[in-house]
Length: 329
Image (cartoon, rainbow, N blue to C red):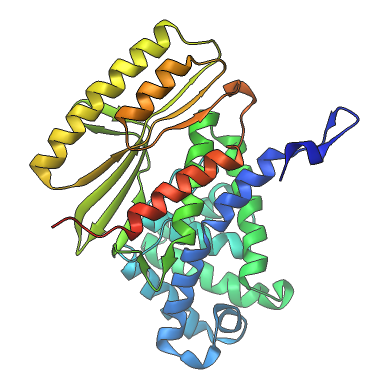
């Protein structure tokens, strides 16, 4: 949407946080689909997850959660992200995603009750499975629907609370939100293009001494075969010394990644994201020449909550190109 459309008599009506939250909510759709596939694996007659949760017996729901718990370590499990676009570990993602559907504040209010249950001799896994099963059965008539459209609204609401409770760099969060949404859109039939699994690293990654804020990793048959690494840099000033230092860092990182790719066979793409006002054009042109892709946003980073559409599209196009590329050799 054009920002001018939301500007009336010099009053800006835009709500960029909404865009980012729904990018993260949309990124949860593959996880919902995965849970649905597990539900229908045991009894296809329900047709979808909504019907299963509204009509299945307590025993069937417990068996579904048990199957999901046992599958958490599998490579086909999609990711669930918190409010600043960092993925939850698989076991926590399962607990939170199901709990979000049946009660508020599962971490603050339900988790202490599970701890009490564990103290009575139950395992944590059994306590979670039993509690979630009973909550679904007890409240499904009140909730009335577990459709994706309804769950999406709940996920967005829960992520807003998560975002308020976490502190992080706004620009990196904006990049992560875009990447998470793109990966979700590319997930079909348990695959991400040519890869069996594609994941967004929870934290920055270090490769041969160089750190990268955002990293996407592709696997085939459980083996890492491709990476997209994205250093995220923001400056309020024109750059000068900052621009020179960052350019040298990028040159060194690109050389190191090229050598690392030769040694390991892992395809690697370097995609810097720069948000800065008045960054010198010569520096931008040079970085564009020495990297696989450059995302440059001419803006004050303090004013950025979501990436501009053209920047988000550039990231999405690069990721989808990598997912669809034919492996070398």
